[in-house]
Length: 217
Image 1 (cartoon, rainbow, N blue to C red):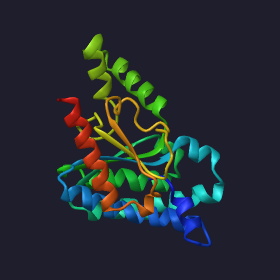
Image 2 (cartoon, one colour):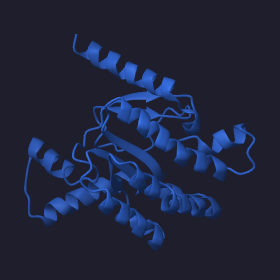
Image 3 (cartoon, rainbow, N blue to C red):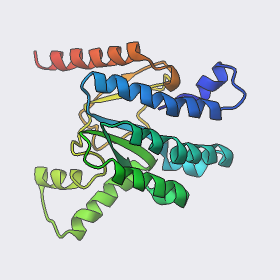
């Protein structure tokens, strides 16, 4: 969900925090569009561990407020979506982490799966999965080793990501689930996240379909 701050500046808004709020609200729209198109597994990059450590304290504090007061409430209202959280929630205020954990429990068993990357660090994620595998006493090699690590990664039941959409005109992945997106198609959009519309979504899905069709001809 990249480009919230630049969108706010371009719109002439007084505070970049208004861009973050618009970005959080826009997630609801995008999930509705995805659901209407039969897409039931979605991963969204909300906040990295690096951002928590390096960005302005006031901005991060406001993001924590959004994560605590907006995202979990919306997720509970979306009747189809089960919430999963990827990332180190100990980097968040305890009240924020508690609300997220409660939302995960409250949405358990729903048919669609939404993974929010919050306090996320891709290297830590893989290292933690390996530690859990070793703690379980599991030994594996080759494809079995890859499967053993994958099943211990956070998120919904399907780990592999098919399509990555990067908004805001940046042409980099920025640590977006690198293990899971190894074979993903990547589409870059010049639109800032709050301005990313249905037309852009359908364009990205169409590009994905064309690439996969070409790969099998």
